[in-house]
Image (cartoon, rainbow, N blue to C red):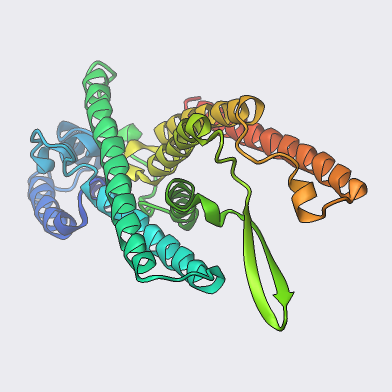
Length: 325
């Protein structure tokens, strides 16, 4: 009877949370009725399970596949990602507003109105991005299901030895999505906050100044590529959070978008002047040794980041290939 429990667990893990208990009870009852008729013979039980099809296929029947932008297949994960994005935007809003209050010398009433409007615009953009990503995955997965119909039929041998109810998301995925969302918000709506903060004391009064690091002169050129880079990272994070896609698919698809993001990032570094010239000079004017140290250190750090990112992508692809052997 262990196979029955594993089979049922495998089915319900593909269903939205609100359906799992009801379907589990119903499915167990249905299978046990058939098992009693077969008098509990192991071969007969396995034949019953095989006749019901793969757990994923059976779960699809319970989902009542209807044409919708975000179907029940991914709805739970979709809502989870939307909440993460909105929470990250709220954090970004609060932090940027606090920084503005602390370091601004000319605080006005209009400044208070500016931030809710920025947050609303960012929330609409974030919601749209997440919805588009899930709509794309939904449509792509439908095509994948059509291809799966031509593959070998599911048998009891394909059932895992143990049923592990893996979480639909991990903490690192949540952190990654939140981090990308915050960075996207700041770069698009509050780019002036990314800078060098310094204070000047004059007659007992402290005045704060912020020297922006992002190049506003070339912003019209690089902002498109930076957003494309961030969107690729966001898609990768979303894919890694969708348990239903399967481990192999998650590894391959997320690696693909991470590689695209890496290529875009390298293109940005090589061709786009995102950072203002002579950052070291802004931090320590006239210090040639410090300027040389910063320039060399930045180059080494960039090479290390690119190398580690590439090795991580290769590792995940090899792991996905290993799953097929």
